[in-house]
Image (cartoon, rainbow, N blue to C red):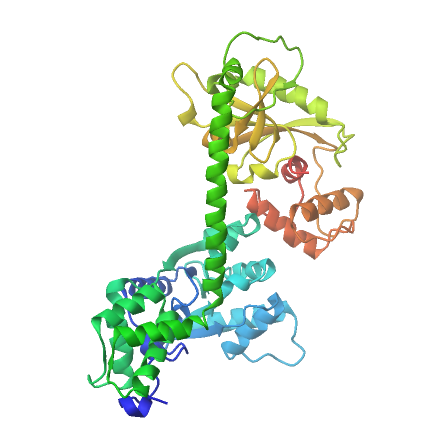
Length: 523
């Protein structure tokens, strides 16, 4: 409508991701440099994240235009697809022709591998770029990870770029995607524009559209642009487009602060969904903060009123003698027992673990009734402790020990709670500890007793036994999509490989003694 009036060839603030309009702010330039570095150095996996409207798609379009002719590219913009649809789309994007009747995933992977080897042999590179990757399912992400195995002895045949909203970062840290997350060697989180970038951004788009300097935004108008948009390019485009329409209506070639204010009012009626959500949650947060303050004041008043009763908690008037495990409920204000008293030596920790095992072994475990008892020790990170269902020992980190407390020392964990865990001291008494206390002292190596049926038990693909059904049930209950049928099929094999990779086991798809022991720990 206003393009001819201002002498534009096209709308300067169109929302389409045209790479010609990419303004290289400090953040966008760094993101582009990360992309080019990852591709040129054949790093394999690259992840670019950023909020809605920060210019990720435009950046990706511009990046592709920077690639040399020898680099083949495939763009996937529909992220709501299955793993087989993904392979079909990739081959179509690369121009790979499939022979009639070749429809299986293996056929597509074989054809892709042949294409990549031929391309590599000709000195070329290949890029797979997936936009809106936060919408990809776990099975599709696992398929993408498997594609990264297409490589020579020295080089990756395909470079994979995942582009998505901040939810992508949260998705990648899931235990079942640990192997994929560890393969991502180049990452960048794209930030909105700084206030100092607004003038350059607006003028850049005006010049690309054909402005010859006779149209301008006043200094105060640009401040208003930033105040509304907070540097989000999509919001900048929306409000500047409306401001130009207002200037056109009054036949002005200068956009004033007043015009911008009016544009903001009009655009707010069309405000984006993420802004509405931020407003809604902002109000909820304000109410929650107010209620929290009231709660703290009430607790403080109660603490002062009953200070004499509370002080008894810290006195030495009562020293009960305990001959068996006793739960000491945690009360408000009650501190954790002095740490050193909870750090057990090897003899006491093992004796306590054995006692706890005997107390809990008849609690309906699917592994109950087995004959051989094994003490299993593995290195497992603290992020997985919330999945443990059986008593276990944690060897303390070296930072938790002092000269008066020689190593090795252990925490004996009876069970986990929403706030942390219950640990057992040398006298068999139970004490609550907070989650941060447990993680802070975690030395990675943990131990537990495993009642195994057969030391040489190995469950493999193709087997059909009751033990296979038990393994499938534990995997299913833990979040791995396995159908408990009792038949060790391909799906069970694939999910078991993921499970083994998540827990640092040998990912061979065979349920051997160590794998069965970990399954027992989380069942």
